[in-house]
Image 1 (cartoon, rainbow, N blue to C red):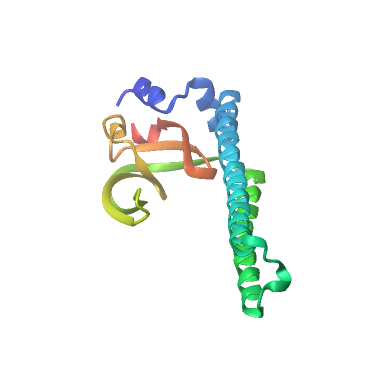
Image 2 (cartoon, rainbow, N blue to C red; image 1 turned 30 degrees about the vertical axis):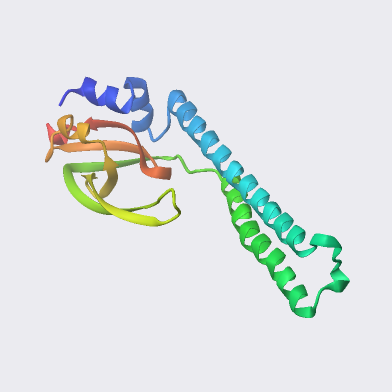
Length: 194
């Protein structure tokens, strides 16, 4: 393993590593994590707006199909009134709940405090079922093989296979990572492992 390759792979330098050793993020790491969080916020806001618009579209479709050709609310039977109420209420209740969740997710702040794990490195190949929705609306699942990096008591899921050639399995390393998302910030082989 080359220290240079490891630094290039995780995009950190000596100042980043020094800050991480002290339990802090470097200014560069703060900027990168903040940009990622802004992107996630935009996604959550977009989802929330999309859900509200979908509920509004459903409302328009239900109202226009119910009151076509000049019918009024007074012309509807009790069953039709209940159906209209459910047709309008349920989408707003369900989609509104999801939209509120999306907007709250956009407001939440992630905990990017620096964590450290140290220990012997082990790579484990694991199989996971991945679900996806096809273009025709049906869902399917498939099994994929991924690598897990285990450092002491900590697991990092779905690591790039290239890392296997950069880190000496069985040797002792220290990995510094952001708590939210377990984003690896920097790593080093420790004196214990030399």
